[in-house]
Length: 418
Image (cartoon, rainbow, N blue to C red; front, side, top):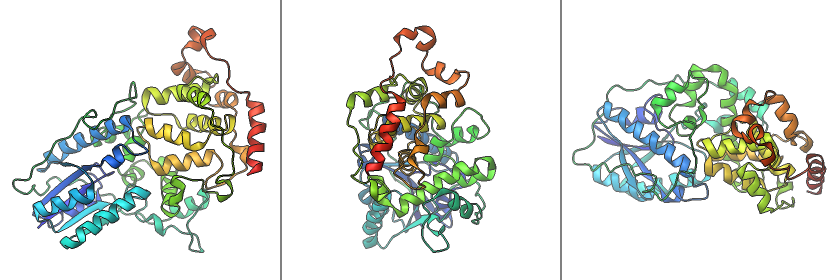
């Protein structure tokens, strides 16, 4: 019996339910990854994140080879490539890790439909979240949660499965199967826009990063280089952060329209967002005249990453101080972030823009950049790292592009109209 393991955001060999199911009882196993141009060049196209993914795939191939297998690479729509590979190998089943985005769910339906005439089933397994079945986390009324704290209480007492180990040996590939090869970033028509990526991809690096203090885990979580369930099991202090990932994933699962519009219906098409392109460019480039904002934006451009507090401050500044559409910020983040995740990024942008779930008064999410810097970077170390001209040649630093006090009043008026 030959089975296919269709890999997407589960690029690891440890704690991999789909891999365990695919190898169980199989005489031959085909681990396959499809490069889909609809994703590579879609609205969230990203050279930096794709380069990180290529590193993850290279690392995964090494792990598979060490276990008697290897990665099979195909380039094309999965609804064509997966059935074609099934035909080449006479596979009897295809195993995948489930996901929640609108695109992934539509893609999986297309592949399942294409496999149906071949009498082969697409088997879904727990995806890149702590809780295996996010849909099962419901209020007492049976509805999905839209506020984090009650979601967290239910999430925290939901039963977990035990993390799985990594198989020492995997079934071999079918004879005479052409493996394909990993492309370069240039082969895919993308470029690296980040100067010095904060980290490199791969499960082997992810596992080393768990005990490290200065390596972010979010890029590895996004590509499934380590499973959230295993991470929670090994590092319980991260539980609340992992819950936020699950929360925003279940929000997108139940509210797919959030991918393009405000969760709160009263704000859809009613807020008059600014279209000030020069101010937006100043924000992107880290030239707003607010050191904490500029440090965050320059960190993003340099490393493909941004510290969590800075993400909130720059998001508030764009949507509240500049009054620019949160979708502009969402797209810019998704272009550069190594950990760019549609559900998490979208949820956080709508949260700081006061248009999403878990609503609070708008006034609570208008962050004063100067006060935020004084509280979270009191010695100025973060700002100096990314805005060195403030200590070297402060005369070259731009004046503030907006007055925060005035912008706050305008923001409150803008939301009252909606």
